[in-house]
Amino acid sequence: GQNIDQPTEMTATEGAIVQINCTYQTSGFNGLFWYQQHAGEAPTFLSYNVLDGLEEKGRFSSFLSRSKGYSYLLLKELQMKDSASYLCAVRDRWQAGTALIFGKGTTLSVSS
Amino acid sequence: GAGVSQSPSNKVTEKGKDVELRCDPISGHTALYWYRQSLGQGLEFLIYFQGNSAPDKSGLPSDRFSAERTGGSVSTLTIQRTQQEDSAVYLCASSLAGQGGEKLFFGSGTQLSVL
Image (tube, rainbow over all chains, first blue to last red):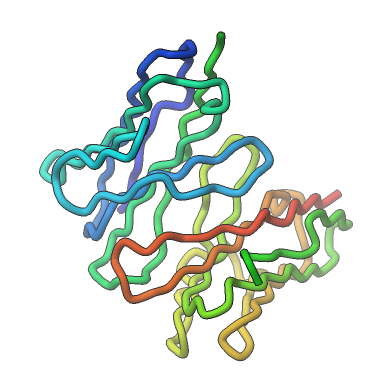
């Protein structure tokens, strides 16, 4: 079966650092994605990992350990606008272009 | 178009009626996906189209749900004899398939409410 787990909710304050974890159990693996979704809006792409290690992109970084079935999204210098739902998604088959399987998302609330 | 376009943005229907939801993907994108999202839930995969290949229908929850993609572009998701549990946001996404790290670009969704 396929299972992707993330915490349901997290809170943090402006300027802080927050780490959102994602664990997955899938029949195959061909990449892990993080998407950001503001309330009432469509999800937008944040990051992609297919090899182990850390991918850094500005204030956001994403880490992957394939042997552990584990990823995290690291958000630095938090801003109020970072309040959103963060979705972890896995492509579980080797064929490119197959559907992404999404976790239920982590709702992050940033306060001043 | 500049992005993925979905219509209608909101649809209210009565239980038992049929509904059609439309998705117009980004021009040139060969892959098209339908997902649905219930309140506070993640995205549930419904169906996937890739070029001229047979669609992956493995996510459709029942035979009341069907989808087609005409001319490799516009897609229509049809729900027959709607039930209250069908109420959700239906999201369409498209991508340039053929690359493992391809990004999905999502439309703004159709909010379906079944009374």
